[in-house]
Image (cartoon, rainbow, N blue to C red; front, side, top):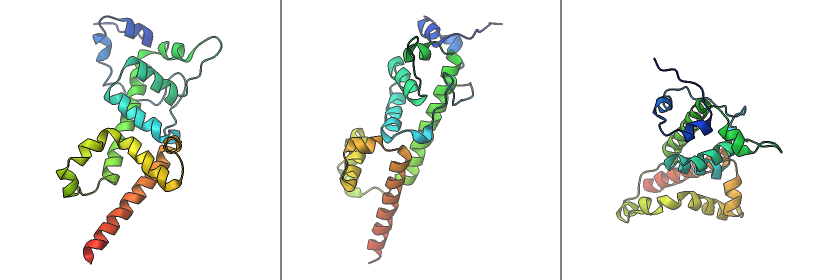
Length: 185
């Protein structure tokens, strides 16, 4: 039987063969805890949530590290940097916290799709609008809301994700009701 010892994130990424640890990535129970801190998901900004989703689509060590430092509010000190704190944590803590963040993003995006999706307009389908606009959807949402509220898109990006989502959900439902009403005439 193989003895697996708890190693640091730095040791893990320094290994040539991580396979004996990789088996734990998808089986450890997700935990909202890293470097002694919790990720306050309700306080995440609209930009932070959208950037997290992009990171999980194309993860690198650097962007995962930066995401963890932001999400778990890891603060260094005179003696120890944020990077050092991240790399000196247990690799199992990394796996658990990463699964927590992945599940948070997955659930958030599923809720968005469920609440914000509408029947597609045949004309928009004909011009492939969804695929053409998809890379810019985050920015377009910020631009649209900034115009409605007389602020900058960067201001919208800094708003709490939950606030932006409530506005988008209310707008989506209102637009759906208006469409249904106009079809009754």
